[in-house]
Image (cartoon, rainbow, N blue to C red; front, side, top):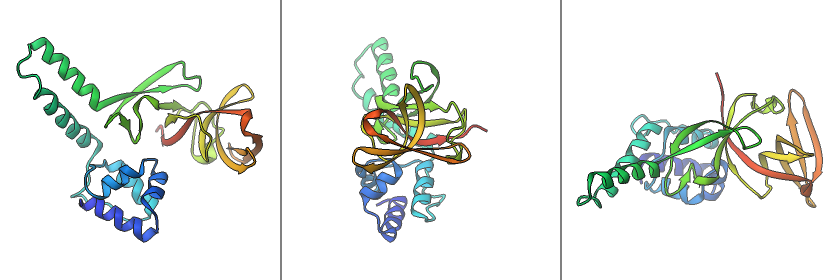
Length: 228
């Protein structure tokens, strides 16, 4: 077990959380948490910071922290070694294609979209591990550029970008939805009987009770990146 894995496990047990419960709070799979705790998964500093907040524990240890850059470099090295070992007898042109393929399998360009999902406003390179980006299927992840201050009470401000993933099922959380012909960001709280509360907070809380079949969920927001 790694030092960071051991600390996360100890903090989780003290908090009375199962691996599945912790995984849900961190937006990853329970398999991911298990691999972290037994030392099979190298985690970035951003994950350690997030876990520390959720578990209300001090997980910072300079000897065990791995930065995002270091993590991506490690994954590059692992994949490139595996790819190059298979091409020793190939031509230079063929080898170049393998190198291109190797790096594309390590990094995933995640596009930044407006709410229509039609206009690409930019992008970021994120680690792609086993066709997963931060625990979500690689072709389902995206960034959303926030278009208004309807959710400023949740610290979601215009021009911030939110790491998100495409969904079809409604659950509790903050989503990009289509409602009354308009795409908006709202918090959803399920209240039973196929109904939910839509919550916005642009300085004061506004709630609306809706039938679930009257909205279309498009993407769930998982993490906010604030513009300074």
